[in-house]
Length: 350
Figure (tube, one colour):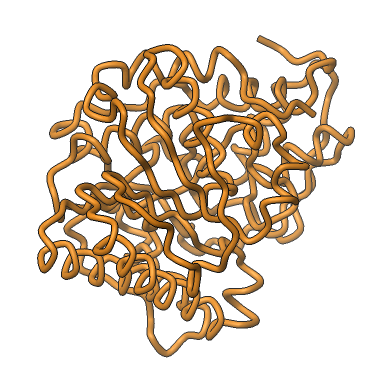
């Protein structure tokens, strides 16, 4: 597997954020969650912009285990503009000095943790956000980006094709598995109140589903599991009836959206981040299979029962109209790029 991101993806991010980086020249960033899926994309695209535009910026990255991360990403660990500090988001020692920008992306994106230890999930989000905000005040942060989630809306009604930022639904507080969504709702409120009290800007990105390099292939992300199965020769296994509908944004588009929001979005306003192009889980599996030149079988565990399909699909008109953001990489190409990065020697269709 490759370690660094594809040059074409990094060039794609910079091409659509080029005009935003000028204000960051010579500035410092503090990033929590910088070694996860989102974080890896943010760090690599930041370093690429730093190289190409000679920005002279620096970033401090919070991680539980800098040594372990250096083993996984030595090219990032060796970057002079990146400093990795060890700590838990709930209790890390505040670095010295001032930081203009902060990205708070630290969350344990684990379905098993959410189901089996919801108290730990909720504490990580809420206590971690409170501790991070304390640092934002001390460090003189001027712009803070919170990576929230579409989970803040709770279950999307089956009759609602796309869920927008004004939807008034919420996770069911009486269901233990709602801890992640409830935690993210609390984090949004905490950040909004804290930013108003301390006079800085807060940007809220409600993130949905994604595909691209560094997406875990052994977690609860269906498209990642499907790619894993197909790379192993199949079959692609669907643990359900295949009817739920999702949408997927390529991670290079994700990076464009997040950088645009940090630099350019108005304060205390939430934006959905994702694709509006809904596909069923079965259609997603078929799209993965089509990338490979040899046939890949698909198995479905449960028969279709006739119930209304579950949905998790954002409306993105606000991001399109107010920030000029859009989906630039279609799903088939997003899957092909991901597979090519995971297995460069593999033959995939174009």
